[in-house]
Length: 119
Image (tube, rainbow, N blue to C red; front, side, top):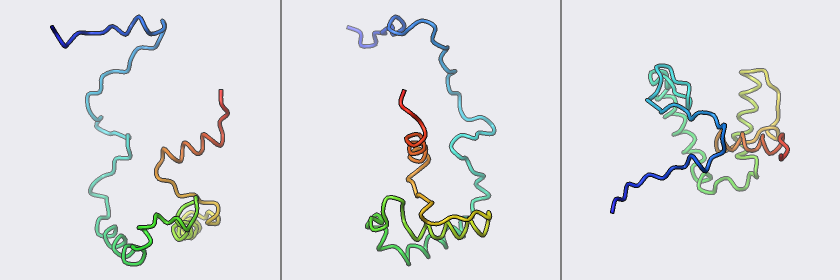
């Protein structure tokens, strides 16, 4: 008995669907997917210095997932960001106006929950 039998899904799908996307053949010469960086431009030494400084100063607090700072995220980071936004971009805001998220998908989900209506 063959275990490689094919199942035809076509009859189960409604008529008039768009054509499937082309097969992926690898990254384009200039890919903007996933935030690809130029490896030569990554400031490795500066990142190492910053990580070491923060771990020495805040390392013990990191093990608690910063639960004492509430759902908006780590307060010292939000305070740092308010100062940086003011200094570098001229954006005046408070730590209460900043929310630290775990990634872009969580941020988009929160925006969608806030702005979109069901249906």
